[in-house]
Amino acid sequence: MTRLALLASLLIAGVLVVAGCGGSDDGDSAATTAQTATAEPADFPEGNGQQVDTFAADLPEGPVFAPSTSVMRVGDNRVGFALFDVARKQVDATSAAVYSARPDGSDVQGPYVARKESVDVKPQYRSAQAAADLEGGDTIWVAEVPFERRGSRVMFAVAEVDGELQMGSSFEFKVGAKNGVPDVGDDAIDINTLTEADVGGDLEQLSTRVPPPKEMLRTNFSDVLGKEPVVLQFATPALCQTQVCGPVVDIAEQVRAENGDGVNFIQQEIYVDNDVNKGFRPQVGEWGLPTEPWIFVIDRDGKVVERFEGAFSAEELTAAVKQVQ
Image (cartoon, rainbow, N blue to C red):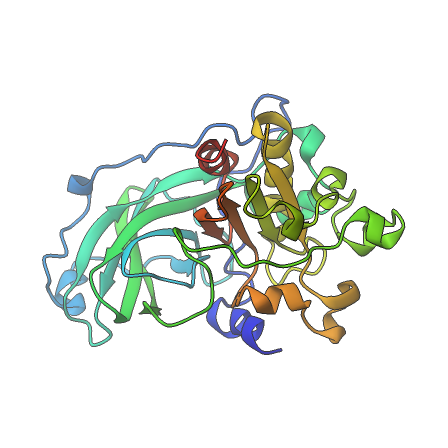
């Protein structure tokens, strides 16, 4: 375990479990519309560059802040996160906002108000794994957090729980750290992805999803890169270190079927022969991924136009796909 081993130490087991109030089995209910923010910046205390101790003086201790995003750039960052208690049960927050500070507790910045996004899908796109993965709920919080320079920053959330604002735990990140993950505007890295033709039609070799997403296993990424738009997803529904891979592959399958005209969707598994003990597939290393899952939306010129680490909603992915159609 080399690069992806960071997942175990950086994103503690369970922190990527989706948080929320649970989903419905209604055919029209699932994950086609993002939930808007339930608060305004004025509903939260201002950071104003103060010390964390001063900022938190009147805030009771609150939920654990569990980010699903680990790679931070200089500039704007989409930060997905969950909120749960010390028993790892989800916290039913009314609203939430993210703040950042220096590791020494100075320079609190924020609030960056979060919105809720659904990670459920319509029943016809729900895999066998998703039922267990979504037991804890089917929404995540998402905030847009800016960073002006490289270096270490600490992030924490303030959430409204039972009518009062509470301060969540903190998490330290390296902003602008050198890594090989292609960013928006970068050239996508050319790799070969196996197709059903390479495995004699045995799709279980290509995907641990049940059932395998057949349409996402028909195209070799290298054959279409720089020629046609592509959505390339790195995820392993059955072997995920979190409970996110199953739901996000389902989301990609729904978006492909309903809004993916003219775009190739490809799922790439993480482990050789789908066996954790055999290490990572070479495609994962070539893309320099420190965590999983990831999904990249790539235009017909081979440029990355959007990327998501961890959980995302069908609406978020649909909006990104529309940029390359």
